[in-house]
Image (cartoon, rainbow over all chains, first blue to last red; front, side, top):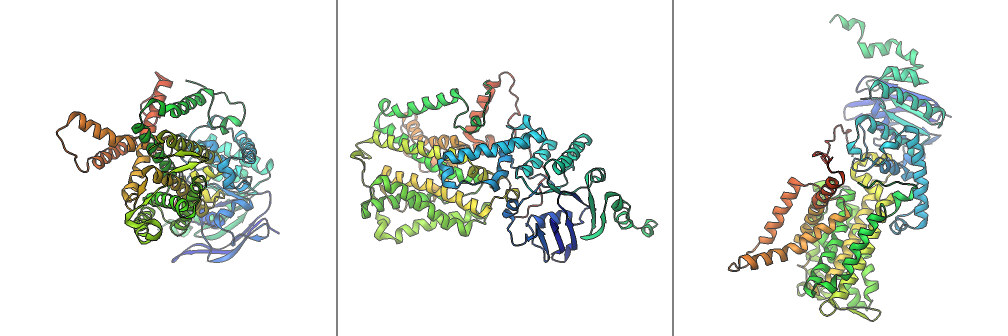
Amino acid sequence: MSFLKLTDVTLKFGGVTAVDNVSFSVEKGEVFSLVGPNGAGKSTIFNILSRFYTPSHGEITFEGKSILKKQSHEIAGIGIARTFQNIELFHQASVLQNLLVARQTHRKSNPVSEILFSPFVKKEEYRHRYAVEKVIDFLDLQSYREKFISGLPYGVRKVVELGRALAIEPKLLLLDEPASGLSVEETQDVAFWIEDIKKVMGITVLMVEHDMHLVSSVSDRVMALADGKMLALGTPDEVKNHPAVIEAYLGGSEEVGN
Amino acid sequence: MRIIFKKSYEADIRYFKDRVQASWYFILLVLAVILPFVINDYWVGEFSLMLIWAIAGMGLMLLVGHTGQASLGHAAFMAVGAYTNVILQNDFNIPFIISLPLSGLFAGILGICVALPTGKLHGIYMAIATIAIGVLAEDLIVILEPWTGGVGGIYAPAINIFGINFDRYTNVAELYWLILAITVLIIIGYKNILRSPLGRSFAAVRDSEISAQAMGVNIGKTRTLSFAISCAITGISGALMGHFSYVFTNETFNIVISINLLLMIVVGGVGFIHGAFLGAMVVTFLPSGISFTRDAFFSDFHIIPGIESGIFGMILIAVILFEPMGLYGRWLKIKAYFELFPFYRKDMFRRQKTYLKTERTR
């Protein structure tokens, strides 16, 4: 049984088929990357997995259970966390508060006891804070703990987003372009973190990324997409040298002369 | 500048940052308690009114400042609180100490009923829907004449708790202390919301609904809950307002009050509890300030109709143009200037433009 399995997933926006009969499965403990030119449907697949979109056709199972019956806010609860391509942090809050929001799925207290701030709520706050501090230590965010997001540089925001997804303590992590807009050094950091997330934390990673260097250095398997269709699937090297992939990125040989 | 050395998670959870801050608030509380011994009954009344406005402001602040939803019909929930409170006392002989929380609860439940159909609306559409609620409430009060007294109004009975009288006219100081105690309780509850998962889920919904969902926050439930708590607090302020104004009609809680409430929190500073209080001071003391100034300097003038609304409007425009964070924002800047002297920079509080937003899927 596959960890995450997509079967014939199709999504149409009016006349446009954003995702066309895509099937693949992610095994537990691997780093699986989706690559492809802009508009290939990579982010759309992520939004389907987050249940922001409902596929017109197909089935998605996570740990053997269908996720299509879940609503978007229930996805984090079953252990799927995600980051966003263009950073969707809570801007008017501190880094610490941003990470604490991610503990929502571990919330056991009810609103009434929270208004009264009962001893149980306080104990829970300590527990959440401890979990968040582990993430802060892992990503070296200590010096930014109290800072507001609106004043942070882009690279740090990117790391905070990763941290917020980790604070959920997920089983599957969806990373939407974790290295876009980052410098070479920051991208290397991301590569190390992805290795650690996989090996130390034991979290399965599904990643969308354009930086082929990062993709080849961390991924176990890669799938290439173009125009919503699957082009190739295999190890990073196999996919990089696949004729269909080269055609999608560089254009077909017969078109060169035109 | 004070640097707080945090040794435990408790330092980020407790109400005050350190002893210095705690003592300032303690001094403020002591001053508030001894106020009736220092000033005359007229001004004690004004301060009671200020606290009532501040409670209503906190109610709206939770919704607007912390959950990012607009409401232009909150006077309706003040009315619900005021009428429920008096009807429970007059017709059902329920003592004030029970009828007050019940009126808050009832306003909260009505808030849920309003939030369920309007919960999916955003921005201007939400504002329009809530204006409709405000207008509807005025008419409903007239229609429900057997209970509400219609256009003739309804009289609030004198409050009596365990033999102590809190009459509007004879026990001004006692009524003030009662209102002060309720205000303090609501501030504590509000602070608790802000430091618990509930407040963080509100902030998450305010700043980015899409990622709030990805974090496991149920948007609809959170928004409804915020609306309900907001309405409950506003309802309690309405109940107190009923006792304070002694008699009230369908016109006491009209649309102008809703606009005043919104003006209050914008002028005070959206997103801060302090903002509700600073805004309430402006709304309460400006009318008396205007009339005193007029009497002192322009004694030959008659009352100019609309001057209050005019000045309120100008203040609102000035605040939006020059100090979007309101009076409390200005105070924070002054404080930072002195704490960091001489290292304060002009653009320290300039808000960064948010660049890059995902394609919103809401």
